Image 1 (cartoon, rainbow, N blue to C red):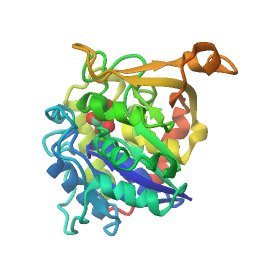
Image 2: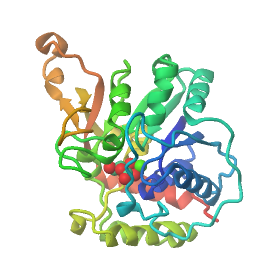
Image 3: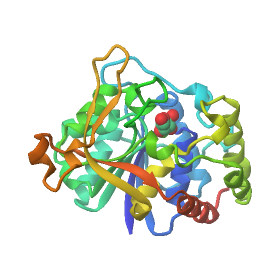
Image 4: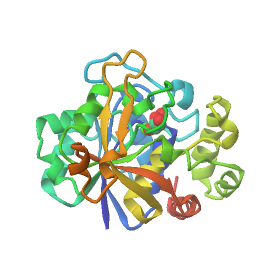
Length: 318
Ligand code: BDR
Ligand code: CA
């Protein structure tokens, strides 16, 4: 049974990632922490409350985290997710309340209480995780696994070099990759293999209120907002990170050294991924560089969409 702690900034694809967890009977969501990212913290938090309630899980703890990046001014992605963060989808407002506390502290407490059991999945800027790991470095040992949606080893989406989650808080991403664990990196190279095409869209009409109040209207917005290469359909980036946790067999990965650019004038937030470490049997000896990440390169896309459909069919949205 996968026990998952989800750090997120909902976000249309964050919402889909959350539905994937909550629609998977073999997964247990131990809590949600929110971070400023796609939209400001007040909005990502309200959306996490709305979504957990809408997906029939109003008892799942939702704890608000950092409202600001570690050192920089905020960057949002309202051009992609709309000013409400869910593309104007008519997900009901929440009646449940926020769980008291601070996101980074909640991450520490949960991982400390069950060492080796909980998988941490971060699908927004890395601010909360960086604050947590700075305050309690032992979380790198306590997390069963750490899966990140962020970065890319080819090119970015918010700038030519950088992917949004790392661009929004490069210093936090740098802290996370320097912390001594080996996160799984689900970057754009992987997530752009999971695009919603016509066939997927047609399948997604069948889930009642989940389809009518979230999936279809939010995707309409995704298409309308003129994302690059939209003729191929929008990608569901964040859901890929959850899918890795549930079905790692659908992914091909390679060990690599990932460093985050924090100083570049044009490359700030870029993930510089060095596969050289993984080239030989004893790679670290040949290059002198050590791997600090497991980078996803290939997805079994058909099987991925089946996993998504199975989960969506189980979500009792109300
Ligand atoms: C990432 O940025 C956000 O806009 C998405 O929710 C996803 O986490 C993709 O670059
Ligand atoms: Ca996100």
